[in-house]
Length: 602
Image (cartoon, rainbow, N blue to C red; front, side):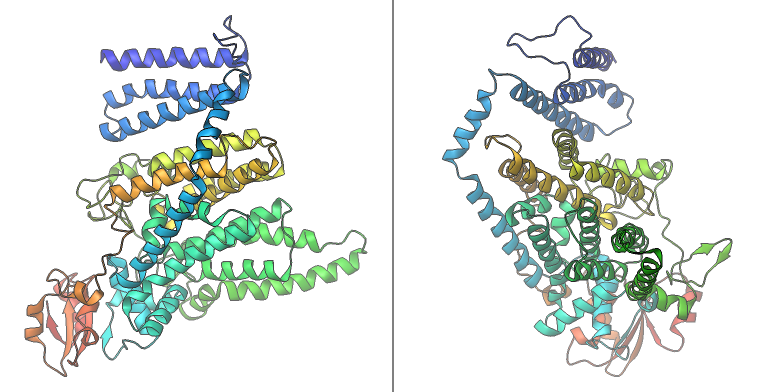
């Protein structure tokens, strides 16, 4: 108890000293080299972080955080705090400003840009090879992403394989745009592994958008985004979370550019807005409310733009009425899945249970409710913040630090779904964002600050907000805006030797990316050239003894084999020809009811 208590006292003392020095209410106004702390924001932030690192010892003593996570958090706070204090010295002191020149001299001998370009290109090409040659892994991909893609394109018809009862209704009601694209690549390349390409090419589209709309160099945006574990992992797999989050991120960034007066409502820009909105609202149900909120901000700008001050009110009203009709028609197309579900199933989010004013809409399943009690006790914003900072996120039962859904454990475990952004990288980006907003005081940073505040508040209260894979757009937008603002700072700066520049940003992001790759044993980065057919041959995926009970022409009800039931159908075992209906093993009564006269195999 003594050491944590001493740390708490020292932390409070350091915090008090820092604040007093910053406000000028202290006798010690200058350091040994003439440094003046009054009004120096990097100094007060750095000192505050160091004091927090000292005080956090008491948190560990009472067991509020796991020791490894707390140790990592304190190390990060100390490093960032010292860096900020160093920046404050470089910015404010005529003697130490030479340090900046020394850094510039050293980097001139090492072509960092060429190294970063080579690194980003190599990693991107390697992930492409992963997406094209390697079999996917993960329950969601096997249970409904790949099966939905196969059904849509007639690769595996309902005469060959039928989903479980609940999965069949998901196929009827869930948005299917991403699955349509997955099936397209499957047909074009005649290999199921090609379904991974949808996520990979969505990342490429995002990188191109950042290059042409925000003027961020391709290699910088590549490294900065691939340093985010969730983005890196999903880029080469058949999960559809990255695709929908790319669409939402583009929509948010277009909104940002509109509010900073960097864009006009040209046909090209309207098309980008429309396509990204269509993508967001027709890939996942969770994205529909987000797309709706963003479009409200865009439509507001659109209506203001079309109101001409020089015209009379009647002309303006006619103009706005025409615009309203166009927006309404566009909205029907954007929310096509929801409109279809309302017309057919009387529920825009079918098959998920929705209750409006006490009226329960048509559904077949309730929203997921598998949260651990230690997570449930926190309000949604705290759950989200803990997950973003990766507090108690890691679990030794996982094969790697990070996985696609932060899974490999049962749904009701405390660490399930928590984390995925790399807590240290989040802290770095948040501090960088604060610094940039302080350093660049203009419309771009003010709108960016408002955007991040609104986005954070909304994301934090979204359903399952702590499962970060559903809301990757928050981190994507933060990283993208940081890169954009750094490039603007670099362009507008008279000195080319600033510490905060794109090359240094890329260097730091590369360090985080390399740590991620090392911690995941390069599983998501380097291809293993292991095909789906090889994956299916593994006994834990497909039990070969099952085929001893199946004959050509049989009609089978395969029970309790989820998420691998799909791989038992005859498409993957030529020249056999039989029909399979998959079903969950919920109870004997449920199985008898759903299987009917089919031959039941467990």
